[in-house]
Length: 404
Image (spheres, rainbow, N blue to C red):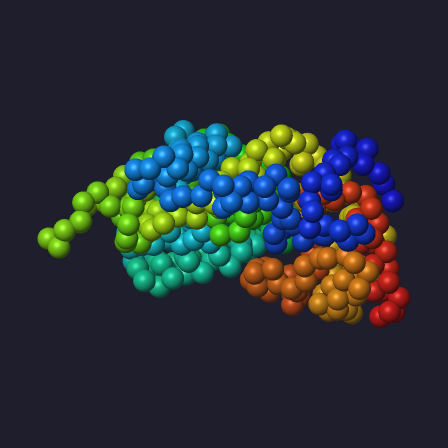
C-alpha cells in the first residue's frame, strides 16, 4: 500500500466529536461530519444570541441580522461572487436547482428549446429539468461519458446547437468523483447562447471555487457536505439573471409592498427568501466556511487525492474488485465486488466499523449506463487518513473471503 507522499496528512479527527475511536467514516459525499467549531456556533446561536432577522427593532434582532448578512458576505467571498446580493440562501442544492428551473427556465424556455444534461447527473439535476421540459415543451439531451466515466466535453461540443438554452452539469460527480473542466463547459455553452448551471455539492468542500473565473451563470451547493448543518444551502446567480426572475415562493420578507390590488417584490436575494429563514443554519454555514478556509482547500484537495490514490491502488490489487471513475477523482472511490451486491458489501464493512455508501447514489441513469444496479462508494474528508483506507481494504478482503 502506498503512503501519503504527495500531501501533508491532515490531522483533523480530534475536531469531530461524532467520530469515535476506531470508526472509519467514509460517507462524506453523502454528508460530512461536523467539527466542534460548527457545533459551537450553532449552540451559541440558539443558546445566547437567538432572535429573528430583518424585522426586529430591538438590539438582539439587529445583532442577529448583522450576523446573518455577514454570513452572506462570507459566502460571496468564498465562491468569488461579485456581490453578496447574488447569493440566495435556500434549503440546499436541490431547492436551488428547482428555483432556477421554475423561475428562470420555465419563464425563458418554450416549445422546441433544448436542455443539455449529462449521464452522470444526480437526480436533483435531472428531475427539475424534466418537470420544466414537460411544462413548456422543451427537449432534454444527454451528454455521454468518457471511458473513465467523466463528462465528455468533446461530445458536448458536437451536440450543442443554438436551440440549447440551458446546460446543467455536476462540477464533481457524486459517484465517480470526476472533475469537470467547468471553464471549458462554460465556453461551450456560451458559444451557442446557452446558460450554464453547475451543481457544486461535491466541489465546494474540496476545490477552490471562483464562480466569476468559471464563468458559469448559476452555481448551487449544500452546507451539510461542507461540514455545515443540514437544511441550508446557496444558490449563486448572475445579478442580471436574478433581477429578471420572478419570485419562487410568496410570503413575508420577499415583498416590497402588499395590497389586495397587487403586490410588488423585493430585489434579490430577498425576493427568493420568503418566510423566516434558517437563521442558525446560516450561522453554521459561516462557521463551516471559516473552518475549511483555515485548513485551505488546496490542502484538503491534495489530502483527499492522496487517499483516493492509496485506496484505488490497494483495491485494484484485488481481482474481484471493479473500480469506476478516473484515477484522479476528487475524494470519491466507487467500486463493485464481483458477485456481491453493494448492500451486502456495506453491511459487512459496517460490522468492521467502516461506514460507506451502497446503492445507486441518486444517479440511476448512470447505473443504467454502467450496466449495474448499484455501487459501493467510499468518500473522504478532512478527518480521514491512511488508517481508514487500511480498514476499508481489510473489510473488502473479508467480503471476498465470505463470498469467495
